[in-house]
Length: 104
Image (tube, rainbow, N blue to C red; front, top):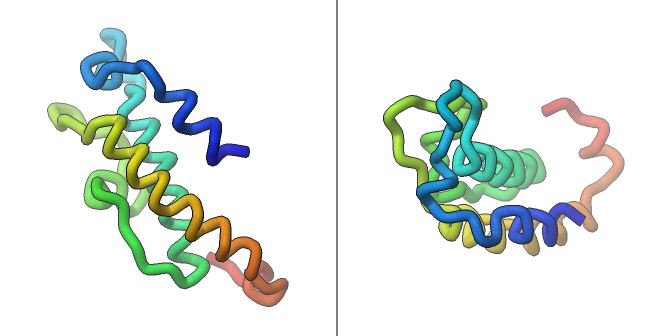
C-alpha cells in the first residue's frame, strides 16, 4: 500500500517547497521523504539486501534533519523508492518465520 502512496504524496511538490520548514524547526518534506526511503533500505538490509539510497549519508544511523543542507530532489528520492520497492517486495514474500523472529 505504501509503495503507491509515496509517489502520490510527493507529486507536485517543488524542490523549493520541499525544503521549506515554515519558519520553524519542523522537518521539511525533503527530509521526511528521504527518511522514509532510508527506512525501506534499512528494512531491505535487515533482510540481507545490501543497497543504499543516493542520500544514505544524510540519513544513516537515524540522523535527524541537518541545518544548512540541501537535500536531494524529490525525484531522486522517488527514483530510489522505485528501485528498492520491487526488491523489498520480493524479499518480504520470501522471508522466513525464523528471520522474522530475529532482532534487528
